[in-house]
Length: 197
Length: 224
Ligand SMILES: [Fe+2]
Image (cartoon, rainbow over all chains, first blue to last red; front, side, top):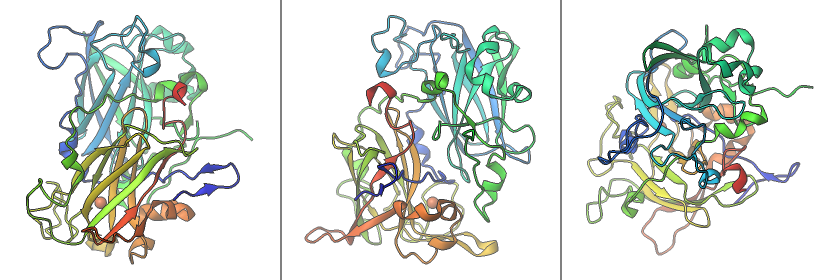
């Protein structure tokens, strides 16, 4: 049975709901937060600078947000996303999916990946989706501090200048970075609307 | 008037919702960046069809306590077009309202024959089918006597389709006080499984739960 929305002749979307505290941990068994190495003992590796992004997710009180499910999505070192439309792109890296998912028990994470490339006027970035108890899915996109392409990036341009800082992954040492995600309150991370946009 | 992103609301009487709901309005995504927000999740290889049967730990094992039910439906976009090959994961509490999850500290009765988690993939028509046990309601907040009504959790992903939702049961006495249900307002009805009879089948009843994935997330842009 379907429910039609007479005004615009579309079906009413199913309401999003919280994932709750009990998302089955075993559903994450095949998941990886390591995009930098190839699975199954294959010697090949994705092209590009191998990096580590250490991070954490905090709530309105500054406490770590335990039990959140994180999903990462990014382009490869040449700025190409592995989507069905790009399947014949010569710059697809056969050893890189750009997709990672991880359930963090305590709110900390370490993403191992390669530094994404610039794609047209898009600065290098990593899309992050957070699923958590108490909220609907929220999404954001993270950038690399001091990257020269940031100034022209069309997404960063819609974020008020004083908030852009909060989307910046900061370099801590060679090949290593840090980002703090604040879900609510002071210094809240800017999130984006992927339903109305 | 300029179009604005959504202001997410906080679920009333829900502590975690208060702690984790962004207070600022969401930012709209400009067209030039929109496609980059649609992940393409690789397929899960080798899903066992038995994973869609939550009523037993494995074929041939004893059936879990409670009423066996069948949950069926179709996954589609706002135009009714089927969403194929998406991974549908469900999880629900047992007859007594207890999850097998290690972090469920409610102390409610466990059922050694019920794990309460299953997966399947939508077929070419976007259809799916699960067998499970009708879940029990549970007291989520003893301090304020707030119950969660009977519900089955759903996650749909794979390709770019994605949705986290819950199926509710018509007439549950706790529906009207559920914080997340309150946020759904008049659209709550689309999250109710429509009960149907299952003559000659070994189920207490069936529930049809069609899932419509809204916005530009259901299919990859150029594939529409
Ligand atoms: Fe639940």
